[in-house]
Length: 175
Image (tube, rainbow, N blue to C red; front, side):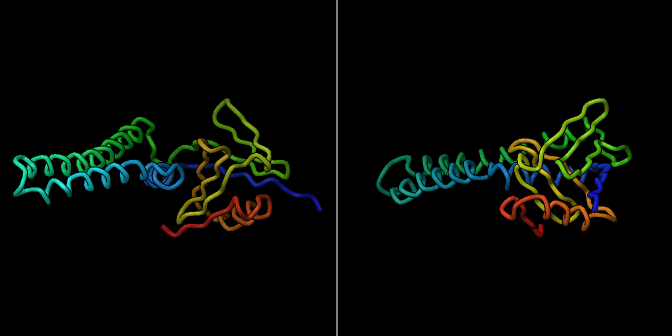
């Protein structure tokens, strides 16, 4: 029995890319940890100041400043991330009308073609595959992923990924 290659033309829309960017930054790369640690630390530093309100002059002001900085900077980070993402999506012109790249899932690995550029990734080197609602994310390395928006053959593609990748490299999310 001859194994056939599965051809996937990826059309990336703004919504697919936005969901991926948040997933990649806050789940895959865990960029939420440092802002949360900073907010918790600064909030903890403000507690003794509030407790010393009647005993030390300026304690209430210092506590308020620490709390404002501790909560304000992580919120500024999230706002900056969102605005940067909006600018990037506008620059990339993601309307889903054109094919961003084409993936060919073959017995030997994944072949990607984007314009005049091409790359091959053997199955053994694939980092991770995630299935989320509406799209599959195929990470060929820790920092590089290809988006596979769900279409008519989405189940066939996921079954192929399951047959080629070990279970620890496959994760399904309902987000």
